[in-house]
Length: 325
Image (cartoon, rainbow, N blue to C red):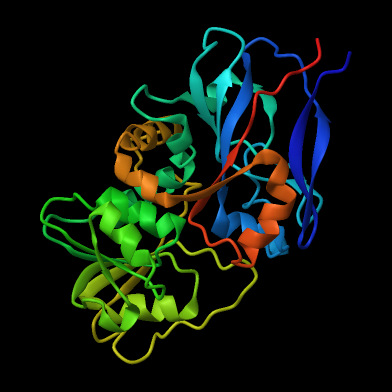
């Protein structure tokens, strides 16, 4: 009998469905994983959901195990935690950059074992915390830096959590939504609305994906300060305020993108392992703001995209799934 699994596919703007897909038998060097949880990275996945990936970025935006091509139909996602059911890792909980699917077969080298001290429910954040680790590597913060994170979404909040305990640093999360105050409190960092944020910053991480957010980030900088830009704008064009004091203060805007490791002496595997180690800290639970069953994804994704369901990371939970022998 043909083995199958269930997977979430995007069909066209604003629509998605659960499909049955063929499940291959694991070959040499491969593992079969039964999914426990996956996570919706709201910013990137809802951009893909609405068809907002520019054509010239189709190759760059491909997820590691994506099927189909942009704009649609496409199986997309990269926050997956499951249990290995074959091979030497049998019984181990692992993280994989895999889409929303009940079971899957991948090379063993594509999974990272979740440390014993990290709950599977929290481990879905590993891909985003990996992005945060890379951003901090790109930023090269110094002891005593005055740091702001503009944009309290999933990526920005992950950066705030990673940088919160940096020695001597003043860290403030800046967001237009006063509800992000509660997240900042749980992460142990300061919070401010854009008009009240502390200026004189040596370093600002920008992750709001908005034009006003980038303007705020530049306005908060001290002379010689730098913005590390993580926002992905998709097919939108934005204006950057490079007049006024941009040149007189000798400011810098530097991009950061997880596709390149921010340290030449570290590998992708080492970066992912570090992200999972950091998730032993229960402060990261603040980033998981809701959960739904896998079968509900076709109804849940549009609500995440239009903000009806407010979320940082929305966790998708999977029941016990069985494959015909």
